[in-house]
Length: 211
Image (cartoon, rainbow, N blue to C red):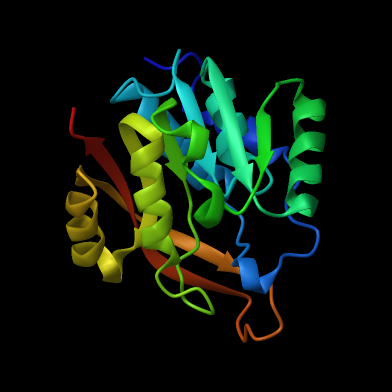
């Protein structure tokens, strides 16, 4: 069971501030309140992976997943993020809705897991898809997530890469299950975007770790 209703969770997340000036090299695309709420609500209501759990959010951005996990009564949440501007917005969002989230500014690929090895019950993330200058970074995020978590990793990946993602997950000791296929609406955030928004088919995957 979840402590609040899905609609209520989405309404809370809609109040959060997003990126002021998204950075293309970091592939900063916002996780919408709609998608964030559905991911987290599913993780809790179907699998009981949020409430009373220690949760990490890799590439936390402005805190949609981190704060959503706190709203669903995660016992402890840490958002890992490389960008100081994003962390300022996340901190502001924490103040606005009066919920605490710990944050660590670091390059996830260089500095994790480190002392955070097997520190969290659950890792949630919307990693870079690796479509521009960061080919393969989504799999690096997944590998690191499996080292941080003891139980479960939730992640979003392009549907077109599904077979590859599930295969890599098994190599990392995590059995992936596609929970849902989502339509991820990428807004026109960068100059090279020709359309107002682009829909990308995305898998919402739950990785269960070997005990």
